[in-house]
Structures are given as structure tokens and as C-alpha cells.
Length: 612
Image 1 (cartoon, one colour):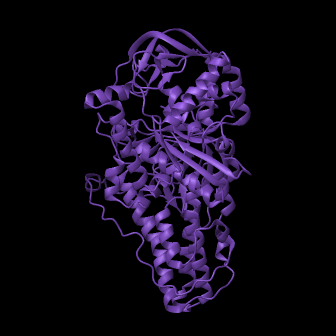
Image 2 (cartoon, one colour):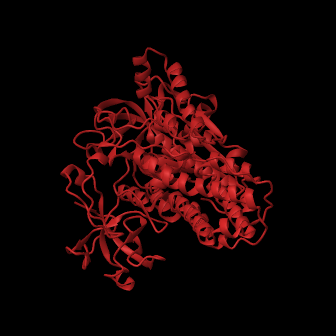
Image 3 (spheres, helix red, strand yellow):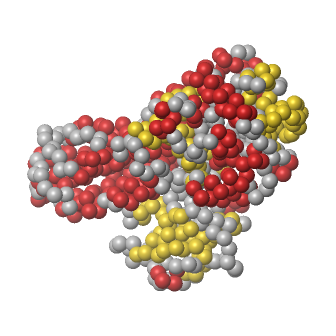
């Protein structure tokens, strides 16, 4: 994020409204909303935009199939995406459609400027085209002759007169800008783009002759603008480029999915360099998978956010998405885990804290005092994590403070002592928790604030407020009944387990193939308070993660630093001692667990290398 600036612009990718929204749309919008709300909380003037990408061959064909005009088709399907935003409490400031006159005006002006600077020329193009991606690919880009992102769709061969953008002119400037300014997050995505930029860039076809549904090319009305050279411009249209609003808010932060990084960096950055505009930050989230596999209609692997919202509280879904998925990596969606986190964390931890404390204060009152409990809050770390887009880690640390508050209740036993100062400390801690959690679960936090009589203001975290006429709070999260699944009914007999070391029953090969094993290097090893067997390890697997391992009796902390290990990276996170463990180490263990030897690659390997 941009420091010391009163304005902050963040955008999601604009969605292609050819069908219903899926889990990826939901996740991206929730993540962007969390970041936007956090900046507003800190006093920034925020411009948060989302919208729909309404042109192109795919939509032209979808409209024809539905027996509707493209205008009518995109207007109707866009309403579904607006409904998604409304239901999931997405606080956007602008919802833009690329059919709007303001957008067409910006696209035309930018293309005229690029042509004037001789970055556009006429020629002929023949290539392999994926209609779903609206992208040309080379033979080398394809996987088994298919699009890498749409393997069930046929690649089409296009040949036509076209206009080219001199993408090749920007290669050196792109590499230097990306390296010098750290424009792409996380680092692994930056490295992927830089590796691809080692190959010479080819000029880009930016017009279409056989696609009528689009913006007319300003210097050739017989052609329309290629969809990516149209869609990407929305980020400038939404802040009224090149006028005052643009000057206030730009450069933006673009939050996007893994499959469109090339378009948002190489193509978009080159266009911006061509018109002399500063380059935005591109933040990349991972794919949302189901049971370890990518979403796929053909396999029946899909998550409909609008149907999901009918079954579970919206704040519970928002919480689950951020808490359960390491931001910047692929993550797994599971209704079972959603229910578990709702019940054990939102209901038992947060909900129970608010209910117990409010009931006790109603009965015994409270007395203003200095809040000693707040020393447990890692506020600077939370701020740093939000600044660095580590939203899942920030949420984990906020919930660690909720654990601290619940432990404080148990240790102090105020229902016996009737200590009014302890009640005040707990009330004040609930205030802090509600303020910090507001970007993540806004509806719940606004209920808490209203009930206890404070406002969601970041500046009030450090203020001692008065709490009067406190009544017992209503139940924030009712428990969700989890029906016994076939998996539970057929659960194998439990074996002896050591905390931090996992035992596994017999599995099928297909189950094993779902495991994502990577090489990692231990950067730091620390004790875990109150744990005899656990060590807290900071491990670099191409991205930094925290792993708790039951190896304290087998390894000294100093001998672990710098050691390369094998890590299961896509294991569902597990809470131990109030800390979330984001993976598991592979180790050789003897029968009675008296010896544990960590598995390492035979030779030095790069962090993030896959093990197969």
C-alpha cells in the first residue's frame, strides 16, 4: 500500500458477465473490501471500484445463444454481480460497466494518444485464440494443445487484418520498473513475470474485425477494440482520467486472480508507460479450490455464492474466506470447515466473550481503569501485516487477542471476585476487537459497537471510553448443526497422536496426488509458550508461512535455522496454542515416536520447488 497518502484507490478485476458468479468472484470482492475498509478505518479517502467487462466475442456468442441483444444480455447478467456485492456487504464506491459512455471516451482517448506517439501500426495477424480468455496464445503456451485456463474449450485459429500495439518497445522498461519498484505482490508472481520477460515480447494485436460487439477503433471504424485493451482501461475511467480525481487517487492497487497477471502487468503496464502514467501495484490472490481441485463445472466442482448466502451468515462466510486461505496462495473451500470455524471461533470464542462479559457487567457494573490486557495485542504487527496485504495473518493475530481475552476471564474469575476493573478491561478489549475486526465482519462489529455504545473509530483504540447501562448482548452467532457426513461415519480408528505430528491412515493414490509438497528453508525457530513439544517455525516455501511442529525434544532451535525441509503446503490450517499452523513438515518417525528425523532434499534446492 502507499504510505503517507490521503487517497487510496483499490479495484477488483471487472467480471465477465457470461454466467453466474463463482467462488473466485466472491473471494476477490471480499478481500478487496477488507483492504478498502481498513484504509477507511485509518482515515484514508478511498475509491474502491469493481464492475463488469461487457464486450467481446464470448459475450456476443452468449447473447446470440440466449436470443437477446448483447446490450440486453450484459445488462441483465450484470445485475447478478451487483446482487453478489449487495449480499456480501461489498462497500464499493463505483461499479463500472465497459458499455458506459465515460469508459468508451477514455478508451478512445488513450488509443488516440498511443497512435499519435507511433505505438500503434496496421498489419495482419494469424494466431491461436481462446474465446473464453479473449487472448491469443502461441503453441508453446498451450497445454496438450488446449488453453492452460480453459482445457475443455477448443482453441480457434484467427487470421485477419489488425492493428498492433508495439509491446516489444517496452520490454526493458517493464523489467526495470518491476524490479526497481516491486510492483507485483506476492514476490513469486513477480518472479514468474520476470522469467517470462526473458523471452522477447511480440507486438500485440489490439483490434478485431469479426467481433462487432465492442468499442469502435477511433482510427478505423470497421474494427472494434480487442477486449483486454478495452477492459483494462476501466481502472482509469472510474477515476475520471486525466482529471483531478485521477490525479488524487492514482496509482491504484489492482487486486486480481492468478490467471490474469500477464494482462495486468505486461499489457497494462506497457499501455500506461506509452501514455506516461505511473504504474499501479498488482496484488495477486490464489484460486479457490474445492477438495484440493480447481473449480470445474464438468466435474461438478462449483460454489455458487448466492446459494451459499442462503445457508450461512454473511460474516461467517467472509471470515472463513480470509481466515482459511493464505492470501496470495491457492486455498480450499469446504462447507464443513466453514461450519467448524463458525462454531468454534465465531460462536465459542468471539460470541461467547461478548455474551459473558455483557451479562456480568449488567449484573455487577464496571469501573474505569487502565487496560493491562491490551499489552497482549500485537497492534503494530497487525498494522504491518495489513500494509503488506497479509490479511489472513492480521486476522489470525486479532483472534489471538480474543483468545487472550477469554483466557483473562478464566484466570481472573470475575464472576467470583466481582472485580469491576476487570470488567472494564474486558469491555475495553471488546471495543478494540470490534474496531479491528470491522473490515472483516462489518455487520457483526457494528452490532457490538451499537450495543456497547461506542463507534467504529480507529483513533478510539487507545482511548478510555465510558461504558454505561450495559445489558446482556444478544447471541451474535448461533451454532450451526453439522450433519454427519459419510466421511465421519467411515472415519478410521484413531491412532496415538503427538501434538504437532500427524499420523495418517491408508489413503488412495488420488488422495495423495492432492498433496502439494514443496521444498522450504527454516528461517527462524521459536518456543511456543506453554508447550513442551512444539516449536514455532518460520519457513520460506517461496512464500513465508508459520508451521508448528512437535520436534522440540528432537532438535535444538539453533540447528534448525537454515535447514531445508519438505513441507505439505495445502494442508488445512490448524490452531494450536492460539497460533495457526499453515502446513506440516515431513519426518521419519520410529514406532514409539522416540526418534524424529526431518526429511530434507539430497542437495540444495530452491525454496518453493515442488516434490513429486
